[in-house]
Length: 243
Image (cartoon, rainbow, N blue to C red):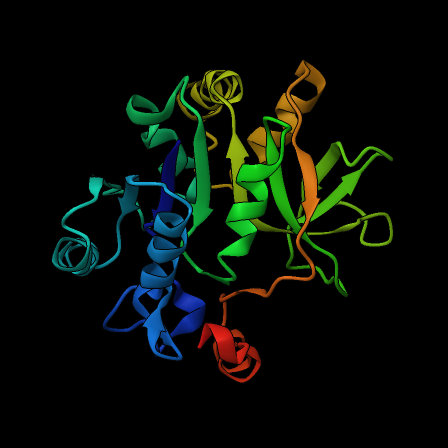
């Protein structure tokens, strides 16, 4: 199992906190988001990482090389980070992850490492972590059938019909990543859809027979950091055992 961590974004909504450092190096409690992510993955016996960088990328490279030199880390620099979204960063990982079992993570999540454990232990090949809570316009919302198979996943799907929010951690099988990069190739190279969220590719794969199942992780702490208010809330809400 490989882990892909997408960390290219400029995080303009977190300014001034991100004026001089990338979002993933912001500290909550005693550790940065990136440190927490790496430790959660290593605890779950994952030791091969693909990290997509962009904004202030050298800080990320320096931090990881200084602290995780024993791990196998491949860096990909998205030089178009200013005018592309995470779908483009994900597409850039194709040489490393197509046809491979892969764990995909956004780099701006503060989360309990047991979420990763739960996904890895799930017998279904393609699953994503879901948090059921009060939803608004900003969350990536998930609608499922009675068996928890994902039917829709986007910011724009019905709030009332949604089961919860996709927190940005997905376990993908080799079969799924093969289909995913075929779809991403079409979206990026033919349709030029390089400035949207990668969940659009997930949605396009559903009618082709490739669906995630949602795993409820609402009992385990997670929060996405998009704004300064999110950062302040995370500092207040982080459980003591994760501090």
